[in-house]
Figure 1 (tube, rainbow, N blue to C red):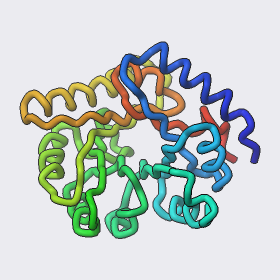
Figure 2 (tube, one colour):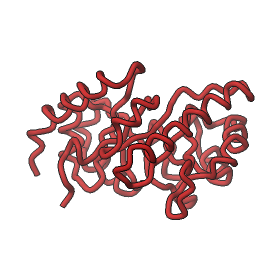
Figure 3 (spheres, rainbow, N blue to C red):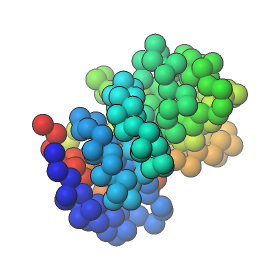
Length: 225
């Protein structure tokens, strides 16, 4: 599969972000469903932050890139749901885990990590039954519990908006995460600088609401086959 259009698409996304956001925004290139060539294309375009939904697919790509690609400087993000039995595979292989949604999973990661592992709390702001993430009301307690673990470094929060073209629904979801972040600082003294929110269909609204990391796949690479 060719990724010749990636640099142009990336330039359009960056221009769009510049029009909408006052804060720096990290673009995480989501290579789920694409091969290692997509990762190489991302790096060639200047995107070193690469996101994968599944641990096994990420590990296969890391292996497939081979020793000749070891100097690419890729920062691997795990953005999909993480099962507790896969927690042992994560430390040392990912720079940032976006999807910690329970204290049990956090403790599993904490036990397996030998050096501080950067994590985000995934919050189901919209309360959708089919979505992963802790409930909005439970997020402050979970965040404080994770912040107290010795081998995890809690850096922020993550959410996904409902799959809808309704910008108001998107905006309420993203604003809810930002308000949660600000409340944790005001009421608990816990500052979480990273807000991972926004994907290909709604990243524009997310950056307007304060996203510092957006997770983009199809808008960069095209449709998955």
